[in-house]
Amino acid sequence: MSDNSAVLDETIHQSVRLRIMTLLVSQPASARVAYRFIQRTLDLTGGNLTIHLRKLREAGYVAIAKEFRDEKPSTWIQATATGRQAFARYLANLERVLKGVTVPGAPATIPQGRPSRPSP
Image (tube, rainbow, N blue to C red; front, side):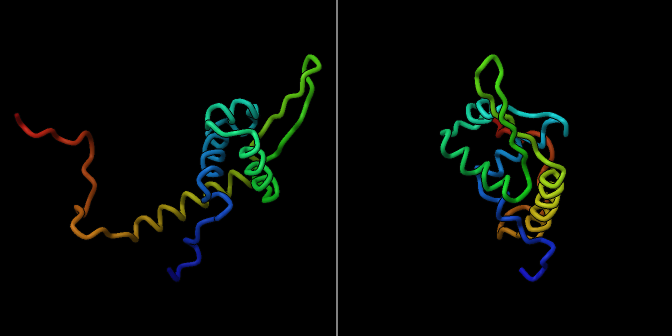
């Protein structure tokens, strides 16, 4: 593909990080999400989640805050403005890539609504 504007951001494109970013950007910009919520929702081990959050933080896509509540540690994750912009670019570029894909034998357009069922 020669169109550089459609290059996918590899930091986001990795499947676990894509799921993390999707979860975070689906929240209001000011919202922070608990580490444990992300871990449970995405069914990730603590080590796996930590590694991917570190990569997203290094890219400037997430902010991580550690706090103590009732003498218990809590970790909060938030998509940064840079992360939200990168995610929006990623989606736009993915759409461009997908629009350029043709599958031999596939219909030219995707039907809208529910697929029809064959008659018994």
